[in-house]
Length: 306
Image 1 (tube, rainbow, N blue to C red):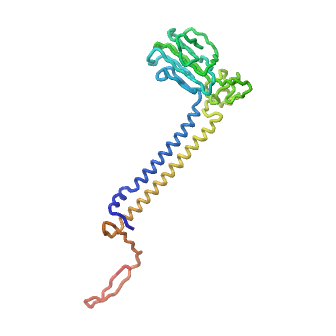
Image 2: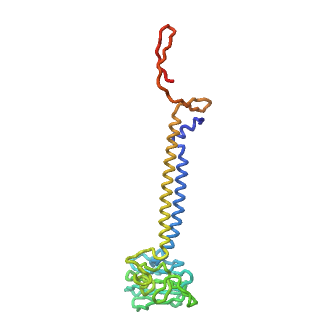
């Protein structure tokens, strides 16, 4: 067995540190990949009703592929400018429908306009106007995939309102079946909107436990096809646990190897030409007593190990 003298200190201080670092890096890469996969699945689960507060930093933004939204406005926040505008677009060219859920506007300088375009021009006609004395318009069906909500608040604190907007799937062929969830009113909405404690059908059929939604008591975020997503998340957690256990086993085995080499480095060596040669000794045998004749003519008894 031949090793360089300079390697003794290196091995004694942790020559297998690169192996441990490599195992840690591999574990980190596996964790990152699993988290990316899980986050992509969670993004699919998180396609339910979006809560959109009409204040900074949401103001003056455009949000795409929104299946449903709760647009909330309330005074008491630092709003910045006197206007807040948010534009929403539906997935798969669905059309919007909306209704006012709650509205308490005590300041008549506060007014909400909803347009069916990306922009809200001064001379444009709003599909919904909400102010301090506005009546309840009921359900409004918008023949557009784009919705712009414009809040003029002037930093007032005396208002609070909630508008629910849902994307409904419209087919040019009446005989085409609904691929999502069909409300009792006949409206077709995304299946991920059922049982989320929000009346997206505007007739509560997507929240009933005794209807076609089959909602359980209380809120359960994994409905219908989302059971597969839940199984994927749990499977990823199991894979992560097995990977961590394997890495711990590898690190433990590496430590055992380092200990064995350390004991070998501490053994007897013969040094020659800057190299060390390990001396392999045979196993010890029982002591024997030899009788030898010394130079002085007397008998001597020596205990030797063969």
